[in-house]
Structures are given as structure tokens and as C-alpha cells.
Length: 46
Image (cartoon, rainbow, N blue to C red; front, side):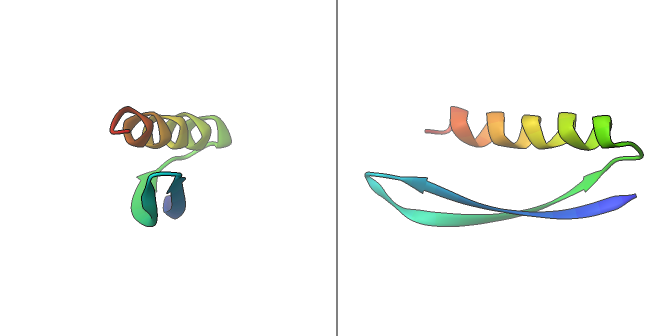
């Protein structure tokens, strides 16, 4: 199943940004893992 994920990222020094991405997952565990990867990627960017 394909999910559209919209995240609103905020940072005290920057304007808020909205990120839209698509995630393929067949189970809730796969969806949780994919969402964790998306958030880790954006947290690494600062």
C-alpha cells in the first residue's frame, strides 16, 4: 500500500517547512520503519 506522508518540521532558527513524501508499506511495522527513516533523514539535515 502506498501512503502519502506530510510532515511539518519546525526549527527555532528557521521558518517551518512542510515535507511531502510517499511511502510504500504492507504492514504497520513497515510503515513505522519507513517513517522513522524519513524523520532521521530530516533530523540529520539539521
